[in-house]
Structures are given as C-alpha cells and as structure tokens.
Length: 417
Image (cartoon, rainbow, N blue to C red; front, side):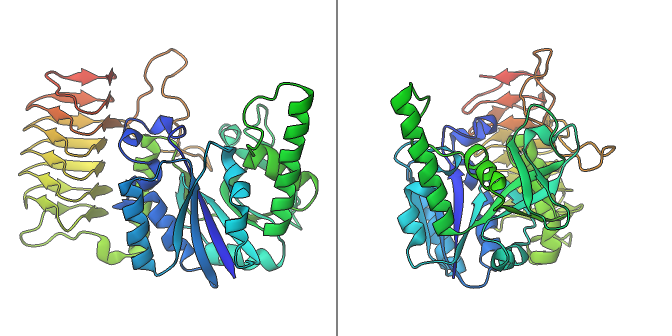
C-alpha cells in the first residue's frame, strides 16, 4: 500500500506567478484546461495499491480548493484530503508535522510531488522501484548554464546511488537536476526529520536561530543528509518535465500538455469542421465556450469556460481563462488573458516566446528573474489579470496588467499597476 503527498505551498510562495496567483492558488491554475494539481492526481491514480492522496500547504481553505478536492474525489474515486500547516514549515516541514496522518494505515512507502511541476510522469515505473531502495529521487538532465537554478546531484553511474546533493549551487556541481518527485520510507524519513528539528532546537538554545525551528527544507536538509549517508538513489527519465515558476513557463507547459493529449485524451483536442472555428495544431476548448466559426485558434491554445471569441479573432500560444471575451478581429499571441477580461475589436495583445534555447541541448525555459541585469523588464509573455478591459484598436506588447484595469492607450514593456 502506498500514499501520495502533494506539496502545494502557500500564498507566500508563487510570487513570480503574480498577478495570476492573486486570484487563485497556483496549484489550481489551469494548464491544458485543467488545474496543475489535477494532472498530478490523474497520474498518481494509475499507481497500483494507491490508498490516499494528501495535499499539504499553507493556503487558507477556500471555496475553490474545497470544490476542486470534492470534484477530484468523485472523478477519480480516491480519498483526497487537504492538510493546512499552522505556519510556513519549509519545503518539507509539513510532511513531518502531519506524519501521523501520512503513517495512518501503515503504508510501506509514500510518494511526494511538488505542485509547481508538470510532465509526463512515469510514476508506475518510479513507484515500482521502492522495493529496491526506500528513498528515491526523480531526476533529469539540464545544461551547464541553467543547472544552478535547480537542486543538483552527483550519482554513481552503475548503482545510481546519489553521492552528493546541493540545492541551487553557486558553482557548477552537476548537470543532473532534481525534479521534485520522491519516494520515501515513512519510518526512516520521519526519524531523520525528527533529528533535524532536534538539532534546530539545540542551535536555538545556543544562539539566536533564524526562522522557524520546526521548518525543514527538502533539498538542504533532507536530500543532502540522505545523500551523505548513502541512502538516496536516483531515477532518471527523459520524458517531458518542466517546473512552473512563472507565467511564461505556464505557456510552455500548456503546449506540452496539449501535445500529450494525443496519447492520453485525444477527445479533448478540438477539430475543425463545418460550423466550427479554424483549428491549427493542438487546441482545447471548454464545452461552454462560444467561438465564432470564422475565428482561427492554434497552435497551443487553451480556452476556458464561458469564453466568447468573436468573428475573425486570431489566437495562438495563449491561455484564455474563464469568462474572457475576445471581440471581432482581435489578435492574441503568447499571452494569458485573465478571468472576465474584455479585448476590444481590432486590438492586439502580444508577448514574447519563453521557450528553451533550441541551440542548447537539455535547455530549460528561462524566467528566474522578472527584470534583466539592466533593470529593464525581461521580454516575456503578456499577462492580463482579472477584469482587465482593453478598448478597440489598442496594442499591448510584453506587458503585465494587474487586475481591474481599464486601459485607454497602447503599452509596450510595462507593468501596469
């Protein structure tokens, strides 16, 4: 029997995802038409002997989160619970705080996933290796320039034992990066975490301790200790995987999730036909959306519920959130259009591609910083927060617009507060 723990973070995290995370917890943001954590649950449901899925985070319980959990339980027929931390406990402290809940029923192992990732997870193969090692880390390869943005590990090429682990190293350690998916033995992990917290209390008694003494960091505390003890093993996969740190990475993830639908859910991909809009490439359209037959959508577009798209509109590489209205002949490229936004006739909303460098092997999407070294806004996708109104014949390029704004002119490379 195995359990799954999904670490969904809290409002103090996900700041690079604003203004979208101001309205909705980042794990509930739709990628490919469904919340990010929905894709996690769907992948985990395929694991044999799965007993329960537990979400752990610091978000206040909300109607949107409760409704999602209720609907997911009914759809996947698996118990799902949300356990709220009383205060931020680090990237792994919540696991120890709720150790009794996780250990209930005596699972032989539990799988841990970070909520800010998405991919074509080979979780069946990954979970089957728990018989070989009690502590496993899922990893992939990045290029040398970007590896320092992730946790890096050094492994024995024959045994796959992790010899060394460093979280976001300042100097080059390895091109092998941590992907935020783990399998742990409950007893061994909880014993280790207890020792870490005990050391924190000892340090606090000797000198002022920065932060919460019950905070436990997954990378710096848990994985580094397991690696130095020789009890952590690595599992490598070349399947699609991406972290979702900012809105630009959401567009990249949306493209890859739609591509995966060809294998997993071909019925979700829209098709051109008589009386239907022109579809180019992979497009998801919610059944409640209204799209004019002369509109052209794709490639890589997700259309949310109750969206209205007018005649002659052109949409490409974009996520349209619930209730958005695109009036006739507007053009939307490389953008996220927020809830209940309105785009006027003949207006153009356009961002810049945030793709991995095609000339560098194992490259990942950039976007660690909102601003470049020159202090200027880094060219990225255009983001409109909730209830933004853009009048007709206006151009918005490479900009971020906070919620509830009525724009009266064109903007380029600006953050509109």
